[in-house]
Amino acid sequence: MSISKMKFRNQLFFTILTALIIIFVISPVTTYQKEQEIIRIPPEEANQLIQENKESFSIFILDLRTYEDWMEERLDNSVNLNELVLENQEDSLILNKDKAYLVYSQNEEKSIKNEKVINIMKDLDLKKIYYLEGGIEAWIKQGFFTVSFKTIEPEEAFALIKKNNNNSDFVIIDLRTAEQRRMEFIKNSIQIDFKKEDFLATLNALNRNKTYLIHCKVGSIGIRTLGKMEQQGFKKVYNIKGGIINWIKKGFPVIKE
Image (cartoon, rainbow, N blue to C red; front, side, top):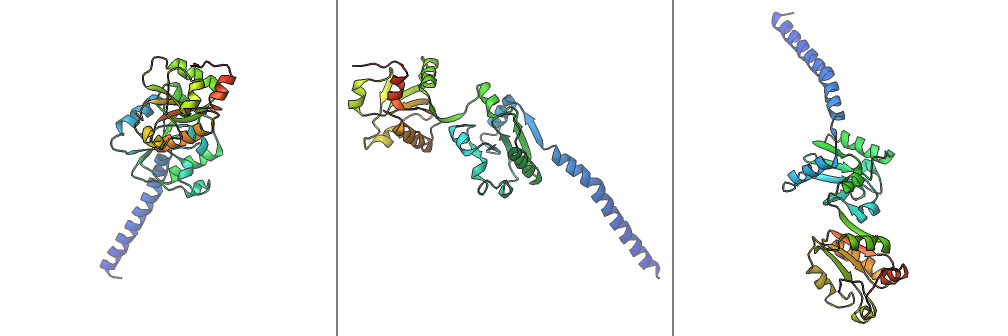
């Protein structure tokens, strides 16, 4: 065998050996680093992270709860997991690798579903994954902003009114007709008749950054309006369950003309 062939074989052997060493040595490190991608952060840091990336939209906020819970109250600009998977099949989850992700659930209670989603996200080799400690419950406890579209009991509505007694950014809307309102109404409420042709236009003219408490007569129109206001981009809207009939039944005050 010629010297040149021997040199070539030696070089080839050395190259293969080097490649194998790199694979076996570096791979465990890569795996280890991937497991460290979940960064647990408290609400204060999560809020700061969101604010810092607000303009660039580089943070994707993922809500792991049920769609119904997400509809009621959520972090602003969050997306529910069920909108990203096929019929609750978490394995179908596809995410943008160029974004960082802030993931949250209801609280710290572990679930098989949440663990599965987190592991899938790890395997996707995403840029960064942050996990909100304490979930949305801790977020709310710290007083940070949430988007809310809830139907609440009269007791909760009364507490909300009392809490916002001197708040100009809190508005009570009576969705009934003028004739119905003349019988009795909640103090400081304004009237926007759901049945009028210009109803949606009137809603559209309202300030979307204010908090609204709405009610109708028995509750059904309030629920429909809740959905319409959500579609129009409002942030916080509460509907009194059972309408003013339930409000009066529970003994809460009204003004009669």
